[in-house]
Length: 110
Image 1 (cartoon, rainbow, N blue to C red):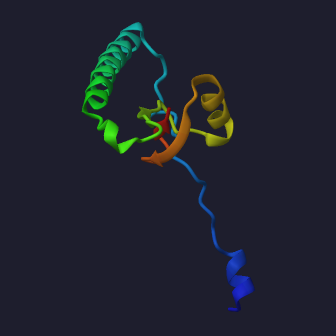
Image 2 (image 1 turned 180 degrees about the vertical axis):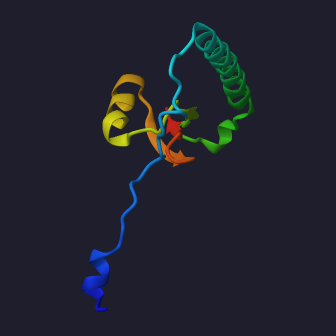
């Protein structure tokens, strides 16, 4: 079999995470929303504490001109960069730096 015949027989698999209907949540309950809100609130408080600690430990003799803050975000589903990357930057000032776990986690620079 020559190379051109072989190339036409290669089956391409779709990219991204497989999405079967059974694994998708059917209804988002008020309890689940409250739980996520509580986790977000705790994470936000921890972020503030860590940011203040880092600022207090900075060495001004190094004269670093800027401080970059990174935030890791876990998305409900995979992150579609084509659709959302510009929107996250324009709305929140977040620049996506790295994807992980099949685009369900993103490291964003503030």
